[in-house]
Amino acid sequence: MSQAPSVFEQFESNVRSYSRSFPAIFQRARGSVIYDTSGKEYLDFFSGAGTLNYGHNEERMKRRLISYLESDGIIHALDASTTAKQEFLTRFRDVVLQPRGLDYKVQFCGPTGTNAVEAALKLARKVTKRTGVFAFSGGYHGMSLGSMSVTSGRSVRASAGVPTAHTTFIPYPVGPRGNFDSLSYLRNLLEDSHSGVDVPAAMILETVQMDGGIYIASAEWLKELRTLCDQHGILLICDDIQAGCGRTGRFFSFERAGIQPDLVTLSKSISGYGLPMALLLMRRDLDQWKPGEHTGTFRGLQLSFIAATEALGYWQEPAFEKSIKNKEQLLRGVFGDALPGLEGELDLRGIGMAFGIDMIKAGGYERARRIQQRAFQHGLIMEQCGREDTVLKVMPPLTTTEEQLMKGCEILIDSIRHA
Ligand code: PMP
Image 1 (cartoon, rainbow, N blue to C red):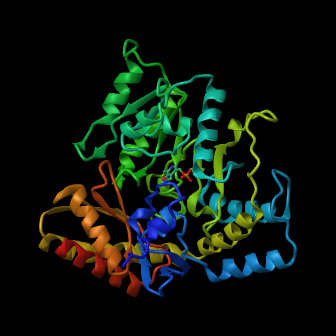
Image 2: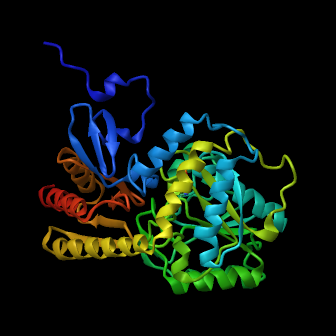
């Protein structure tokens, strides 16, 4: 008897991708729940790699999108001015920038996060007339040649021959090898005229390394880094593509340190509906592009503006931020209670609604993979992250109910116990 083709054989013309972590065919989704073609329900603790902070098919966004389509709203307008863009910019200024004392100009970059990183790197070089960039070990900034040249994974880079001649990688202050005094190291590089390293155009960092394994730089460290950049005229780029839009408990991940980066990249959850959108925020005086210096065809998907404007409605309610804090406490409490009773030395790191359970000293990648697979079978979607994918990444939509959070944590803890 011939066997039915596996899920992947049915899609054999699709190049290999990480969907292999999830052997199912998904059909629909709502809020924090995804359904496959057999009707099986899965709790989503992955949030489309951070694109779905407000959940799948959020009701108000969906309604606005449908009514926009029904009114023949313009879909593609390149870089032209439109009502949808104007509404987004106005709300972004009123709800996000002004209340935080920020005065950035907004550049719409191509559809995906990488495009915003490319724009940031190019602009920093153009404005400072320097070429070097300091980046941090464990950081992830994208897959194009430029963004990957500041992404630290050696093997993925080498396999594509990505040039890194202009990048200096600095150890992040926290990582799998413990703590590192990166500020002294940086001071040495910048202040010793014989260090052999030129003053760079920019430093690019994630204040919380997300794909890198949920490593959290302290507020004090971030403040000192800001000062160091000021002292040397280095532009500080905060890549908030994954940690932004509320993931760490505030709209921007750098708010907890009270610092203002010179450039900020945003993507993933900025449109709020899983639609492509990428922004570069820049200090006003840095807007020095000349016409044609940085363009692209898909810089203005109007549907993204419509959804994004609606998404920002969440930030008009102080209760929303408070609810993320409450859920952070809940996750910390549940994991804090359960993990010490489980086999191995499980390291918990977390902020806002981004948690990582590191299995590096408790079975490593293999065990993390078994847990991830078992959790999937029991209805929980979750990814692995970190240098060697040893970290179980807990990243549910911010709108996940407390009941759903408890249920997902139960599946996860049970999977750790049995794998
Ligand atoms: N920066 C960070 C911090 C990211 O997490 C990602 C995506 N994982 C990117 C940049 C690249 O974004 P994209 O995949 O949308 O190009």
